[in-house]
Length: 350
Ligand SMILES: Cc1cc2nc3c(=O)[nH]c(=O)nc-3n(C[C@H](O)[C@H](O)[C@H](O)COP(=O)(O)O)c2cc1C
Image 1: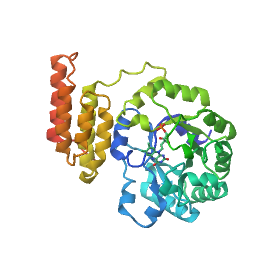
Image 2: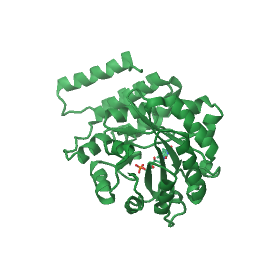
Image 3: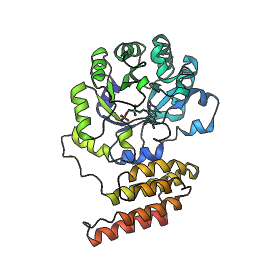
Image 4: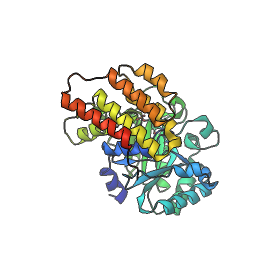
């Protein structure tokens, strides 16, 4: 078993890269709740080459990330190799692997020949991977989809090409690029990729809780699980998946007040990390509150929030809607005190 294979066996529950969502603040919360490996949002190799500070800040590590996987996108072997080497220098021992995005279906990415469009050009994909593998010492992995055009499953052959180029693992999202995020992810393709390569396969697509995580692992034989949308406003999903994989009972879901407390903390962490990034919290806040009494009014209010105080005011309001009459008076007081502490002292950001 390769070193990276054993690393993945010990880091089976993974937070997916999500552009515009999985920044270092969200990653911190997911790690606190059991995510064993995290990925940066996808980072343009060309953007790094231009020296863009905004692109560069996507490499910021969470204080809880001993190691992090950095995901790059691009299609020029020389640029990808040079920027991967630069990332390796910058991140030092904190880099788990370089992951190459060959699954993004977004028009602005595909039209430049990046992301999922590389699945249509396996020779070029091979050159990109081979160049990056030669340029860095850390493992190189690739994330891709079932295929490009709907109905044309190319992932098992494509995985073979990627392995031949020297990749240490692949992640397969069981949808075609043409499907974007519609329809159900096909887990059968993950099993077929597992059979077509000798490197570890990370399964991705529609894992929503411990039960589905366990099922994905049992039915496909994948080595590790990658979770994206189910973690939005729900870092607790990692606790559930870890419990299911370890054969423990899944923990109780968080109460409405626990969800609101975590959302409040998230907002304060976001402000402490970078006050300008606080608008990102709008969608995060809406996810935390989904389904709670008062959520639709709050969602509209979040869209006008631009300071952490604005968010606190909406959370205060939501707490009144979500008083939990099963809680003892002491529990209510403790919860209120924790929220006051977050408001007064903020959160520490290292
Ligand atoms: C908002 C959003 C942003 C995403 N950004 C990326 C990205 O930067 N890189 C990538 O490889 N996949 C990205 N994805 C795809 C996810 O990593 C994942 O493959 C997909 O959502 C399927 O997993 P899920 O069913 O657990 O959500 C993104 C998905 C979403 C919803």
